[in-house]
Image (cartoon, rainbow over all chains, first blue to last red; front, side, top):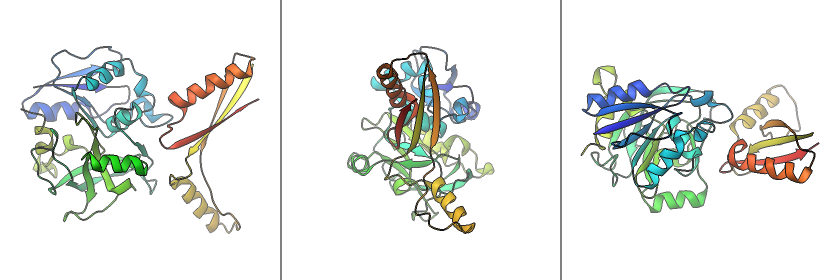
Amino acid sequence: MKVTILQFPGTNCEYDTQHAFEQLGASTEIVWHKKESLPEDTDLLVVAGGFSYGDYLRSGAIAKFSPIMKAVTEYAHKGGNVLGICNGFQVLTEAGLLPGALKRNDNLHFISKHHHLKVINNDNIFLEKLSRNDVVNIPIAHHDGNYFIDQDGLKELEANNQILLRYTDSDGEVQNPNGSVESIAGICNKEKNVFGLMPHPERAMESILGSDDGVAMLQGFFK
Amino acid sequence: MIKAIVNVSLKAGVLDSQGKAVHHALDSLHFEGVSDVRVGKQIILKLDTDNKDTAMADVTKMCEELLANTVIEDYEIELV
């Protein structure tokens, strides 16, 4: 299992992500955004969290033009598995690899805390090791996590089982921290090979640090 | 040289939390008669060309590709 992790100027979760995947037994490589190709043996490409290009203009807006993104788009279109976490999710929506957009949180605050999430669909490689309606506890840390998609887009997400996770309380009842449409915390594309979520599973790998619910999530990508 | 003023704001149907917060603050300051507030951003570009058609076409492309996220934002271009 080879995990390739993208690094833009301003990315700050690449080493946490690397640590998490290595803990699960993967080999990893961090790839600088100026490169124009991905390692050939990549099994999973992760767009890690942070503040690429200082989030200038909009979160993820400038990163989408980095040289590496052409290779990322090709990789995704060929069916390669791509996971965008937090800023990575924002980059993937800006790049058009995932539908919708991430807006400023409704309460205008940067939110940093553990939050419960409910698994909505698990018919995909990412969440297949979890069951529908499972509730996991995963940290969130974002200013622009307010997921928006128009009504037509939302219907399409629902029809194709593209909604992965919703923000809830510990009982699985909807609890929306940031104003996201339908409390959506994560989605995938129609083909179910490109995944994006605002919460950070790579920060939930040790129960002593609050939660190890991220393990079952990231393990999905392992055969 | 042409100056292009680009105004980017959230689409009408998209909730503008910043606008709402500003509206609330204006209410607290007892400014009455404000029915709605929308907060956007202005991007000012100086262009080398003198041709307004070229300028409009170029800036429109810039808006579509980078300056606005058309999933949630509208843009208006003014050339001066």
